[in-house]
Image (cartoon, rainbow, N blue to C red; front, side):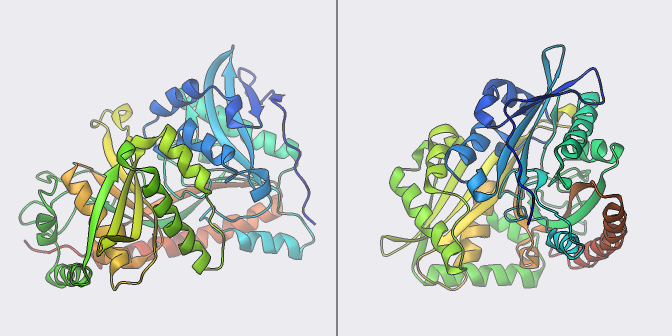
Length: 434
């Protein structure tokens, strides 16, 4: 039987870095929203999913709460009463809703008569989107924050600490603190037409989107311009799939922000809920969560609704936000879209591809969005020009022997992921020798 975790009550902890004080908060509402968002805005790889309103909605809506296995422990780092850093931490009795799979590690603990749960995760619940996790004013504070987290987990008797889908700055701080790295693969689309004579898009990015842009790349001018960059077989396949949806009498409309009505949100939730129920599970997110999004973060959402004969039959929802890279001195903030949820009340051939990829990509091209992140898993996304990128998490295990065993496992797994990425890159869907 796994040990229980006692929720903190705005406790104070003195980390090994004596210049800093770590404060623990049992609710995001105990953290100043403006201060949190100001820290987030200063990060090179901010996403809307780390905004205070998003995290608070997960809590207040009953989506990510102790009853569902997410006990919030929001951490703030202080130096002489000046906020230096913050992060969202959850103590968990399971590994659901994380998308970095460690159930095998939990099984190994159980076979040795030990408790793997509760554990601590630094993550956005149910949201496998790479981005800043350790919000900090500078590298020194970020390093101090991760060290304080490890110390707190050790003192609290938690088996492990996991930083999921982290930004490069977080990875560097985690490595410096002795955490082990784990890599996985996602699929992202870039709004960049290869210059004439090139062999497809430029060098592979990591999941933060960091990759040099070859000279001559420019945004796609239209969806047809995007199709023209693909190899003939991929271009033909996409056109055939779109034609099947159109021939079935299906048309789409999209809405953003406050243009999404309550009825639209209600219909979307019917679709979203059905997708989960068809797989035998209740949905992670409640209807109240999306009500909070409509009230507190409307500008972050774009909704696509498929209609046939004037009746809605399916929907997909994407998020949009700026990923600030100015801290690196490279360019202005990118506008990034994130594929999130979809569902259908009727079955139409190829409707999923149209709702989840072609409509969002067409919208991204029309609105100058630089990147569309398609999320975790799914090699089929490559046929739609979403290319493989590497996403990284970081892990600390309290038990030395298990930490050593996991370290060996991650080394072997990492070699496999690298080979997998190479194999995927060889299947580039873009034209060659143009």
